[in-house]
Amino acid sequence: MLTRLKNKILTLLKKISHAFVICNSISLFLLILIIFYAQKFEPSVEGLFIPPPTPPYPTAAFLTHTFEILCSISPVICGFTFVILRRINPNNSNNFFLLGSTILTAGFLLNEIYRIHIILQYFDIPKLTTIKTYGFILLLYLLLFWKNLKLTPYGIIITSFLLIIIAVLIDTFYEQFSIKSLLIEGIPKLLGMINFTLYFCLVCYQEIIKEFSKK
Image (cartoon, rainbow, N blue to C red; front, side):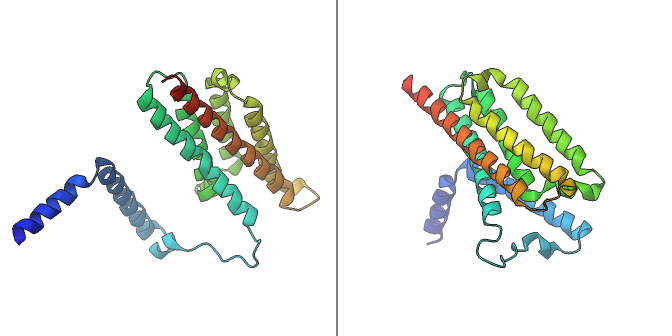
């Protein structure tokens, strides 16, 4: 009986992939670190799992959450495409471009979800300084991958960047506007992210089709 149970356990363990072990080990390690930090430096560990506030009416923050969902699409699709194409063709000229796009879009997502530019103000880092840093990263991305971008429908991403920059400028100098409305920031921001997501979906789709058409 014990031998049979032991064999079943060993068989089950063999079916667990290395990816499962690595992913869960890293997750547990990071979870312990975050809990330790919250226990030592924050008012409450329970705050780590505070649920989002219930909207006061059905459409409250509806477009904000839509924007956040759109933010999550590009890093996932770029990262997945990079992993697949790198496995199929390590010499693909666009692999580095896809990796850079994954990092850029993931950074955008993390900032939007965790409000990094706001949190850094708790550490006396001005919001404008953080925005300038993000602007430099964006400029570096454009310089590094301009040749790759020119082979794609880059008009879409340029339009996206312009709309998002407009939204950032409105947010930065919000106090100077006579019309105090979240719409003047939210509309260009949402439209920018729609085009941002569309661009990377098209690029990844074209890259996958191009690679498989060689086979």
